[in-house]
Length: 409
Image (cartoon, rainbow, N blue to C red):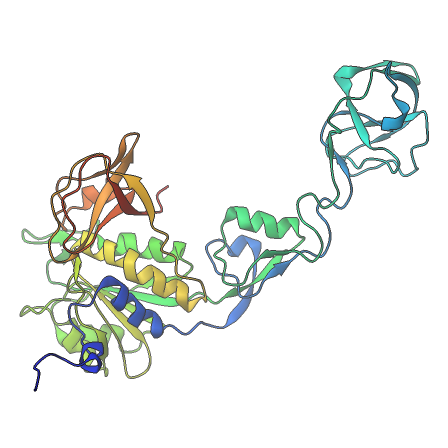
């Protein structure tokens, strides 16, 4: 008995209507991690570690006082306290080098090394100085000491290779004494906006034109993700102009904005075909952004085609471009969905996976009522994307939903 159903092998070769997960997997399969380079901490924010950072000494490298006060030996303090001889001082960066003996005390300040032999800090409010002697009461329960290696120990792996750096992780590397780090080279990403309807911001716009706004978001997005972005001069609806714009561009990834669908003026894929384009993804079963496509040119450069409408471009940049750029740097997949309580009801979803622009409130997450993909104002006000799976049932207030937080200032 014969069947007209496609085989699993045929299904694997399908390029149209891929799920978000399958489309992303096909893109990431083309991402080969770039070589490493050494960068100073000042140039490492947002980049990806190419090797682990290991502590070479304890932090702190000595037992340190957590308070201003007096370093003492707990055994010297009986039930009535004690009168001790003041024999020196320990300050941050300048310790007391001798061993503290019975009946002695040392003035100490926050962060200063505790003298050998001491095991207790009496805070200054609980002691009374009289010349070269100090009267203290019975020992309290807290030692007010930070132990040696209380933050990390020599040999500890502080940051794993593949970690995306941020200011707090850079601080940890600095605390370990590192002035430079081995990081993946920044992927070179060229952004090309296409369409006769586009006018440059700040210039004169014709009566039937709009200002090109996609690059204004995509370039800083790429920079935050560790890439080295370049904005190409916009190309009109002309195959030869599009080919000329990208033919000699030095980049690992070319991102096109607009011309991604199949209309008479959607000419980007035909233009890329002249450069040997082999498609891995032709369309994605996602809303917004169904026309998103991805492939590789004959010379190995990757091409991600984003729709022209801003919301479609930005949603698909989060879903596909960000993981691709980070994968080129050897980073793990960045998408960390979280859950939130829904603060407004939602109707049943259609056949496409829907990523709704939404905002977080004290009551929960609220999708914007108008999800039209041309609305820049909505994306500017959103702080997360709310995921609705294909065919999802209607959701009520209080239901749990998946959200993807956006990196907002």
